[in-house]
Image (cartoon, rainbow, N blue to C red; front, side, top):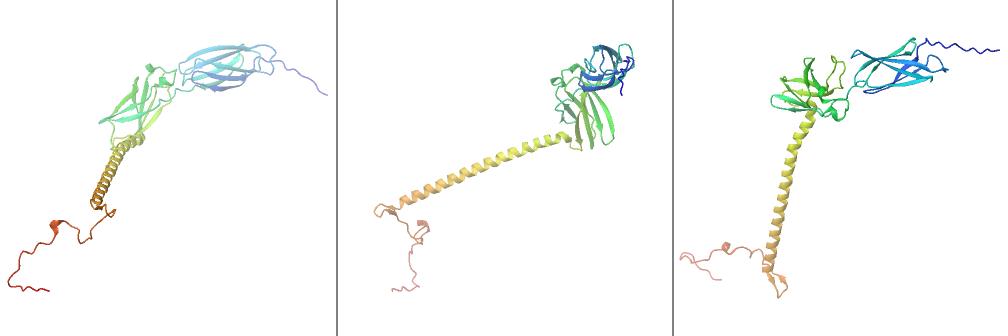
Length: 294
């Protein structure tokens, strides 16, 4: 035996399984289920969004008969913190959750240029890839001294560079650049970090690879070029010398060529030599030396 029981819907129950499906920089998709299965009529939901940073509230309303409800909350701020409450329109029990939107991205191409008594931080404008970023908001720069274990706030700027002075010799620093934090530092962008090794060389440790490789290239390339030029000149000299020897030999052979014999005639080694090297002529004989005639 069995019996079918139909439960009386209780509109005082809270929505079930409230959770976030997807969170972006300026929106969040939330999802929940009705207080009971298979509603037989439209149900009015009230969605209250409390901005925990700005201390403001917004209320949205959704009317549906679906058992599963999905809703997109728009016009949020990057890096914001929100408290979302969902309940039926009759102010029944509520379901709540917290949402943190995605912060602005970190600036790209952060690099260091070393000057005589200071360094310059450079980076690309964040507005190139973030449509929600306005240059008037600016950037803020922090520095961490690993030797002293101290983090310092250096300041903010609306430019794409920042000057840092008074660095101590032998200290290692980490610099971070991010979109300026709003509302007492509660809404910040993602930081871009760069290491700087100041071990008396005044060079950037992370950018040193690029800088040093550039310096090495600046030395190696001219040296290789000079070597190639030297080798080229050497080959030209050898070639000209070879041609000169070949021409000298050809002229020498032509001067000893006999058209009657059809070949070149060369004397023996004893006959070779300049006329100046021949033995001197005998000019006379001494009376004391007898003459012997064979």
